[in-house]
Length: 131
Image (cartoon, rainbow, N blue to C red; front, side):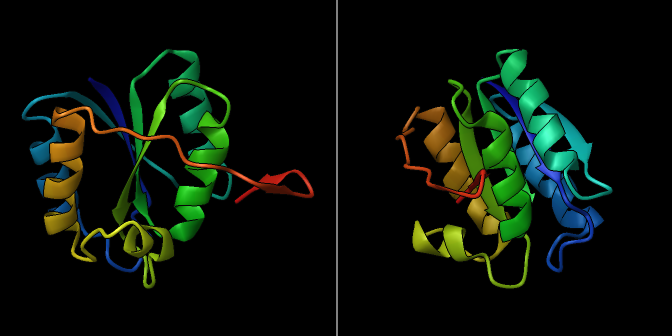
């Protein structure tokens, strides 16, 4: 798969070390490009571009805000959404049963990508924003 890893290095659990570990683990079986956000809305633009280019998956590595931006960017496309917990609460990642430790969660995500266990999720909107 062709994967874009969107990293919010300002998120509380994201470090240079675990970003390298995550990247290396995903890149074992997939082509992975890494980008870092540096302002609000940046993740949405990265995700929109990835969907436009036909990438298979965009992985959000940050908190719930980064995940929301990535989901907004790929909404309505065939590009899959991947999540790695990097924030302080990681509500969505916890809800779907992911480990709160990014180095453990990437193993779960990689297994899902390797076996193409990808399922649709519903998105709602309020005042033009997805949730």
